[in-house]
Structures are given as C-alpha cells and as structure tokens.
Amino acid sequence: MPLPFLTADRAFEAPSDDIALPFDDHDQWRRPYRPGPWRVIAAALALLVASFMLLATLIIAVAGALPAAGVCLGAALLVILLALRLLRVGTWVSRHGVRQVRFLRTVTVPWARTRSLRTVQQPVRWLGLPRTVQGQALVLARHDGEPLTLLTDRNADFLARVEAFDRAADTVEAWSAEYAPVS
Image (cartoon, rainbow, N blue to C red; front, side, top):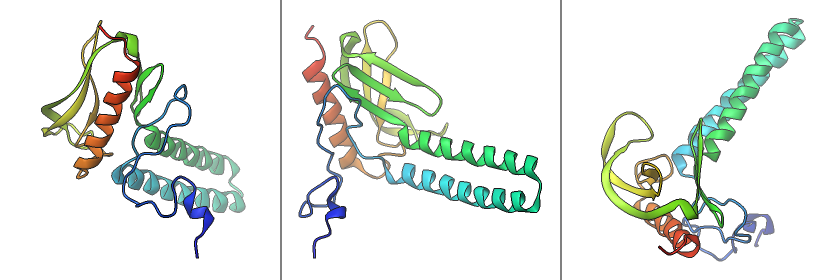
C-alpha cells in the first residue's frame, strides 16, 4: 500500500540513495546536496537536549521559580536556534552566485567575481576540527581575494560518502559553468 506522505520530495518508486532534489527556481538559494548524517545527528542530539531543557523549564515554573524558569527557557531556545543553524551550514547556490554558510559567518560570492572552481587534493579539516587529513576539496578562486574552500570530503556532510561529495562537487561546478561569465 503506497503512502502518499512518504513521497513528498521524491517518487515512491525512486531509489532512496542520495539523489539531489530537483531545482524549481534558480533565483532561490538551494543546497545542491542533502545534509550529511553527522550533521543531522548532531542537530538531533542538540534538539534532544533542548527538549529536556524545556521539560526542566516546565518543572521549574510549576515549582514557582519564574525567573529561573525564564533563564532555562532562554537557554533552551538558544540551543534550538544553534541546532537550526547547524542544519543550515553548507554551500548554497543560485543564479546570483555561491554562498558558503558557516556556523558563525556567511560568505556570498557572485558568479561574476569567480575566476575558477576546481576539485583539488589538499589537507582538509576533519569534521571541522583543527586536525587536518589529506582529502579532496572544492575550491573557488575569486578575482579579488583568497581562495574559498566550499566543500571537503571530510566535513560533516560527506564523511565516508565519497560518491555524494563527487556528485555535489559536480553539481556546484555545473552551476558555475552555467552562470559564471566566460573569461
């Protein structure tokens, strides 16, 4: 028995491997790949902690300590916002350019300011930690600045998913080939 709510983003008969979602409007910012399991697990654990914090807020409020309940509620909301930001981290593309969303900072580069986009072998950070390992990175060379590393095969989206990294890098390079001006 097919369940229609299971087919919200793909056909029911389609394989459930990491196929990218189709793009409807090229003017909207889109992530050309799905978030990786490490990123989703970290956000889910943060939301689990937030749910316990909200339960503690309720218990503290029922006990009558409203200022303490307010502090606990504020901390829970902060954890929820951090989990949502963690899910938003990644590389986004549109007709206007490429955007790298990091945890605390966002960099947007219009396609007109890009010189080249290529996949290179270089030391990359493992899961964003200070430790570096040899890996692949998708590097964007800008006309007026230093290179920007958009994707690595060792980050939270592509760790142990080489095919997904290759597919995402090819997709970003296709966006660049379509919208970057020919020099």
